[in-house]
Length: 134
Image 1: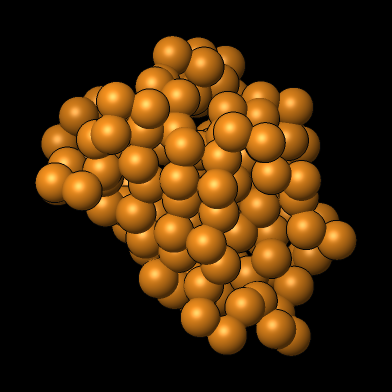
Image 2 (image 1 turned 180 degrees about the vertical axis):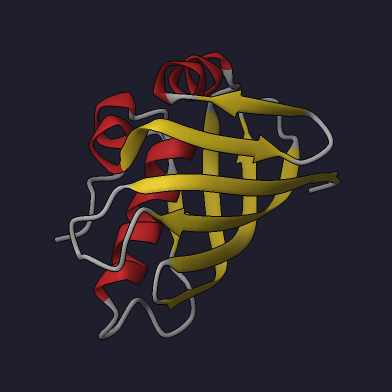
């Protein structure tokens, strides 16, 4: 079941949808939770010792730092996925998000799960963020 989208965030799904890959749905829901600032949902999928490298900006260590970073981000109004790929413990996704100040940012997330188990939490994220005009 897809994660509920915050009413203020318009989501454009990836071409072809998540189809038959359950982990792709988790990645999709994870990104929607990040961009929609759904801290409860993020807490369910991130490990307590998660490591998040926002390349060129900062490194976040642990769940509380990640939640603080997400909480302090600008509110977003639109999220578009280009792709979601999964293989074993790894996944990646890219797309574009636009915030309430009409600033558009292209993103790419490389995600590592703690194991290949379906219930495994996310243990690491490396993200690339590039501001661009709308």
